Amino acid sequence: MMRMKYLRCWGVLMVLCGALPAHAALTIEIIGAGERQMPIAIVPFAGDQKLAQSIVAVVSADLARSGLFRLVDPAGRTPHEPSQVVYADWPGVEALVIGSVAVQKNGRVEVKFRLLDAVKRTELIAQAVSAKDDQVRAIAHRIADLIYEKLTGDAGVFSTRIAYVNRQGNRNRLVVADSDGYGEQAILSINEPIMSPAWSPDGSHLAYVSFEQGRAVVYVQSLLTNQRVVVANFRGSNSSPAWSPDSKQLAVVLTRDGGSQIYLVRPDGRDLRRLTFGGGIDTEPNFSPDGQYLLFTSNRGGSAQIYRMPVEGGSAVRMTFEGGNNFSPRHSPDGRNFVFAHLSNGRFYIATHDFATRQMQLLTRGGWEKRPSFSPNGKMILFASEAQGRGILATVSSDGRVKQRMFPQAGDIREPVWGPFLKQ
Amino acid sequence: MKKLVMGVLLINLLAACATQKPAVPVSETQPAPAAAVQPATAPAPAPRMPAAPAAVAVDPLNDPNSLLANRSVYYPHDVDAVQDADKPAVRAHASYLAEHPNRTVRLEGHADERGSSEYNLALGQRRAEGVKKMLLLGGAKDGQIETVSYGEEKPKASGHDETSWAQNRRTDIQYNAR
Picture (cartoon, rainbow over the protein chains, first blue to last red):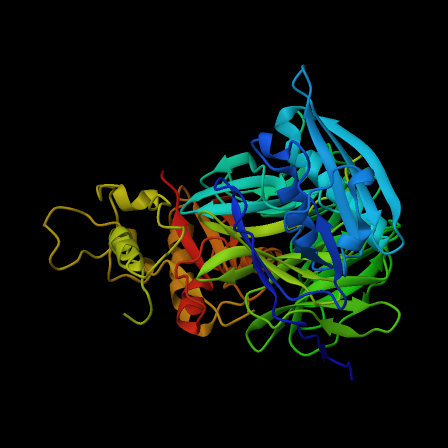
């Protein structure tokens, strides 16, 4: 028997990011906290108040959302240079962030900041980051990434992006946004459903399924030029695109030869090869990080479960045996486990399966929770959920301790997926 | 009505009823099948409704009392086989298509939300393919039938309950304009 371990939230910390400007696309709510939260004080940067968007507010919100930090109010203390810091003034604070902002004559914003270890009284980071004045949030996310990485040892994901479908009535918009929900950009807006967005490994393209031709067709669209190509448009349904780690091929699901089966195809639609030869449903392929295996959902055993097979072909091995049905597998970035949606007694849970221990771990309490995907550092999982009768975005830390819910301003959010690290 | 029978001429009316449920998000702006707006002028061997005006031949497709008025096939959860209750109607459509080789249909498979969107797309496609197989067995030709799936993307009812799910697990038989 598989051990089903429910992880409970620690604490009841609930942070409503009310300080964010009103044009936020999403309202964010954080529930739970890391096992140990590091106390950190972020002193308002000199000159920060002159910017339309406070950099310190974004950095603070990013670090708070991770659940790994406890933000300590600077309470009027305003050192901006190391020489102004009196460590004795910061009892109980382990990390201190200070800095200054300057707007240059050409309009560029330059931020100089320092991360100080307030216990050892040493400097951990001293760096300048600059960008155009419409990129202030990007600067702030970069600073938050640097702080997060230095203090936790893991790469930060605040600069990464997410994609999802926003549905309002019949209107469906395929949206790309920052990981905190800001900077929404619709790359496709149609009055037919959109499904299954999938990021290319370098973050430059999205593959997705659109019904604009009256049935499911797979497209790949460039986020740089907005140009797109049809990857698969055969009779029946064409769906579930997944990129290989080397970007050279997509796994797709086609019904051109009968039932829903998995095929490989180049991102320009050439060189189609069939991979599975079952009589039932094989769908939701996902490549392992080494590109050697595919996880997928199949009903070949009588109910929807998760299987694994070599990309080069060969027999599939069933991975999930828990009661109920299991869907939407996705490898963790390190390849050690996969996340999936577990349906039991009419409720969907987000769960992980460890390849080594073969144990399932439920990360959520259940509800309408679907389509999980890992953040590129493997520390968070983004999924579609529902609250107050609306489709929302939700995240849970991969240890189940920290949860967030992100409410759209309007409509329902569906089909979210977390994007890759972007090259700096 | 044995089930939610979608009479051709009643489609818009029923759609209006469906929208009385709170927050039905999609699906009601699909244009009604073209057959609904076609005048019943084609010569047809079909029996007329008693109340129909004399001298107007009625295409059995437009007869609300015909089995052909039944345009939706319903399923249990995670099942794609046509159930016994719907077989007479599907057979009637097969006969009609065999007798009217110029008519074509689009079979739209749908699923309830209990599954991933991709699994449900596959399930809806299998449902449509299952109806297609019965139509072919009944004499329809492959070229008369297109199968597509919307999975869980266009629910007729939006609740998280069996009443809604039962309406959403279906294949719609839509006649294309001639």
